[in-house]
Image 1: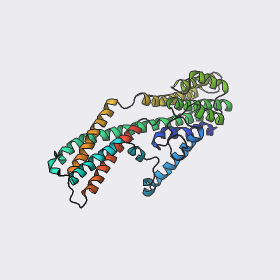
Image 2: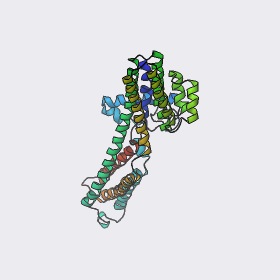
Image 3: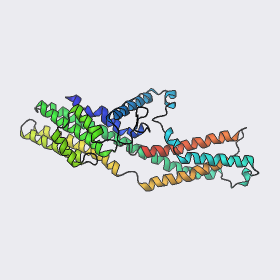
Length: 340
């Protein structure tokens, strides 16, 4: 009984919520990477879950070499796809070549002091770090809501099984709740749909019968919250029927309804996060500041003359590390707020 109540746990909540954080692979193949950005097959979704669990094991192990040698599931592919990374490296090395190979000297160029650059860097760092912290907070809240859905289903199953409700009716209750859970994610994400997720899951666990599925397909289960809200109505009506039949007490019915509505509320919060992303004006401010700061930093480093035999090696490394930090934080900020 309880294995059915947790049926959506292993394949659903954590996979769904961490999907965009586990890699940048395209759909074909999938085992080499972890993320699925467009409708995939059931086997590819299962491969995504297996890959995510492998990433978790590596992260928990804390092996530095194992973490650093990994490519898929890291920020490196995004960095190499960022035009600003190469543009700012080009700015630095072109200026160094001009200074080395021509009569132009660093003193002939407009100077940008460390103090002037630090002033802009302080404003940029504040907005960038605050942006990253806000996106991580959104990610954590969504993860907590996803896990709370699992808890609400399990609590409902416990209350129902400990009451006088017949066993088959308890199974029906849990089937409906798991169906609502799955349908909510299907309506929330473009990655999942009826064919690649609900149909194989329903065939494996028999959550809904053909008539019930037909009713939900009329509502359009592949987008929006209507399908899972319909099932929530079924569940609340079912509990009222069990109360009238005397299978549950008024207190038990009240507790069941509370857990069912708690599930609805947590699912609704995920939709609210999707409908209200981080304000565009703030994101624009972050990108504007960083887009001005990065070329200025490359320019300043190109004009500096470190007391080393090969100043380009030291300066180039500092420019690259600065680019990894700034662009990396921007990439994380774009991924964390909406992992669903």
